[in-house]
Image (tube, rainbow, N blue to C red; front, side, top):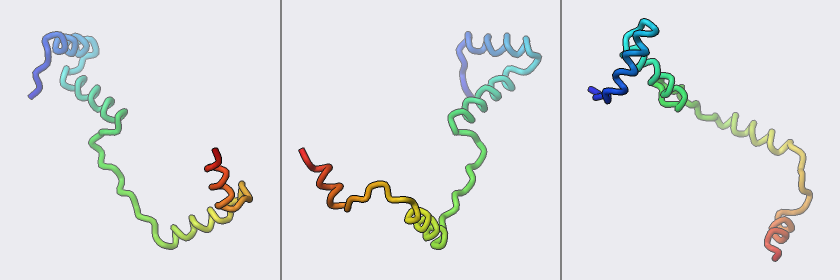
Length: 84
């Protein structure tokens, strides 16, 4: 059981009277919106599937097919990074 401050309870009651709903319903709706916005909703998260070996190899093939942007050898790149 939550204990709301008098001001919070009165605000909930005034708003509920204005829109014709129960205060509990308004509070629940507000909490659900906040939870959804923060990614803490009650809905179970879909299970993440693990990649199969074939899928991993396919990703590797796509990467190796990309154009080489820097034709220098790894040693040349490292040497350039380590120069003062």
